Every structure is written in C-alpha cells, then in structure tokens.
Image (cartoon, rainbow over all chains, first blue to last red):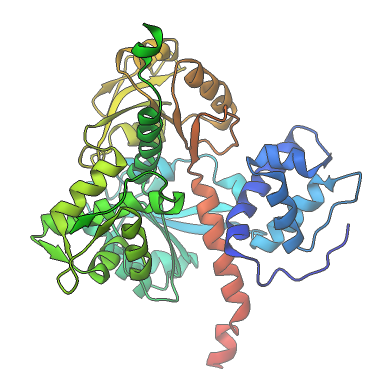
Length: 224
Length: 224
C-alpha cells in the first residue's frame, strides 16, 4: 500500500463519504476482518464500489491488487485525513427533545465527537441534566466555547430562535454549525454550515413514493 | 404564470430541494409576503438564486418577469408536485431518545407528515407514551402498517438492530425508509432508503475545520 498524495483538494462529495468508510471499516475491524476488497467495503458503507475506488484514489491510498485493503491501516489513514485523531468537542444549543437525544447519543464517542456542553435559553431547563450534561444558560455560551476550545456547534432549537443562536455562536468563535432547526440560516462565508431537516428527508421519500404509486396500476385493478 | 411541463422526470437534486422551497414559501406566506423574487426565495431557502430558477423551471412554473412568484400559488404547486396534498403517515421504530424526540417533534404537521405509530422491541418501553403515542410492541409492526396504510418508516434503533428492523419493515410493505441508525442497510432495489448519520455530519464539518486550521498560521504566532 502506498500513499501517493496529500489529502488537500479532496472533492466535497468524497469528503462527505469518508465518515461512512470510517464507520464501515470500524465495523469490519470489530467483526474480525483484517483485509477487505473494495466491493466488501462498498457493501459495508452502502456505497457503489466504483465510487469507493475513486474516492480512495483521492486519498492516495491504493489497496494491494488481488489482496485488498488493510482494514486497520485504511481506517487510521482516513481518520488522519478527516482530522479525527483526537475527539472534537461540540456544544449543543437547545435542550428540548432533540437536543437531549443528541446529548445522550451513545454513538458519538467512537466517531471522534465529544459533547462539551449543552445550553438552553429556557430558565426551567437550566440546571437539569440531559445525557449526563448539566444544562447551562445560553448566556454562558461564549464562556463554554472559549473554555472548551469548541469550534463545532449543533443548533437544536425551534426555528424562530435559530438565527439569533447562530449569530451568537459565530460571535463566540464557532466556525462549524450543524443546524437541525428547519429554517435557512445566514452565516458569514468563513463559517461552515450543514443542515439536517428531518421533515424534508421524509418529504423527499414521500415524493418518490407518491410518483411510484402514480406509475403503478391500482392494486385492486390487478387483483380483480 | 404558466405551467408548461408535467412534474415527471425532475432531477433528484431538484426533488431534494423542493421541501426547502416549500418550507421557505410557507415562512414567507406566514410573514405576509404575497409575491417574491427568485433572490428572495433563494435567501429564504438557503439556496443559490440561479439554482432556484433552474429548479423551478423543471416544475414548468415560471414567475412573471419583473414581478416574481406568487408565494401561495407556488407553494400549492410544489406541494402538489411533492404529493403532499394529504398528510403522509410514518411509523417510527425505536422509542429511545431519538425516536421519542421524533415522535414529539412539533414541526411535522405543517410539513405534511403525521406520526402514525411508534414501536419498540423493548418490553419495558411498550405501553409508555412518547410524543402522545403509546409505544406498541415490534410484533405489532405489520398490523400497524396495514391498518394505518403506512408506506414511510423511520428507523431510530441501535445500529445492531437496524437491518432486522429494515427487513421486517420491507416484509410488512414499507417502501420508503429514513434510517437514523449509523449503519449501512441492505434493502430491495424498489425500496427507497435515505440515511441521516449525525456523527458523519459532524465529521464532515470537522474535516473542513481541521483543514482550515492547518491552512491558517497559528493565532499565537500572529499575535506575538
């Protein structure tokens, strides 16, 4: 196995799949698999095998022909490329149902994410414990971020509060935001913003279900 | 405004943005805006305005030049294209932290999604109430799906349980799955599968943060 290229200039679509390869390789390693083919990795990651080979070529990491990829070596290499050699602290804003679920999420640790703090604007929630974290007041945001050297934040507030929270996060030095509030946020160009809109995901599925159903003859007609 | 094309054959990338336009148009309508420009809609949806114009051209829906789009008309048209003229029932499998948060999510109703049922494999959770829904046993899955005419499901189980849940959902007639369990699922080709992997979203943000930091001189060096 040879490392031919620096990780700079990896296409965004490849970057977005690296965590899936890492997750799949960790699963393979945990199940005792030492070497895997690109087809094997593709299945474990839920990605087409031609895409796997192309993505890994961007990392400069080629498997040994006829043997495959060394699972642990490749996992370590991807972790280094992703920058996940130490856990990233993340602050969660919003201690409602979703924020609490994220604070309690057991899967973060193994994936290089560490919840540094949970904050909320609601005085009734401040001081309660969610997922092992005492909820802090939103006024403490700047402190929490500075003390914990946090650069990632999750917004899990109602949509009406999300923009002012984003502004406060940016002012406090946050450079990467994952927004779960179903509204578009405006952030400076140097801030990375990703959005998870659960209802939109369901609507996309619904669109395909709707048009599939229109394309099919009615079941009754087929049965009768 | 003229409708020039049937909604068939809309590119997937456009389909994925339709819910964002719908959400933005509903926000605009709620704030009393009757007519909007593509730039205005772009800002509200968090999308580039050239992409907005191209996407809407796929719907065959062109705004009036120099006037813009009729907000309510366009919202109604997109809702029809998406197939969201009546609420889609969805079953949530997994009544843990995340499943409970989704069951309680207030934002679904306005976006055409209705939680039909919540099921869990853990006898200790069956009979408890989450988000106003009494948790049913996983054995009731096929019944719940048949009675509620459900075709959408959310998997919010631990990763180890997700594949067998997906198999059971497919066997019970589910054709669209949104998977929150951080593992790749195998489903038949005719089943639509979308994945939300929260840790992967954070890792993608972390990748960019890591490489941005490497590209910048250390802050101390600049200050000293």
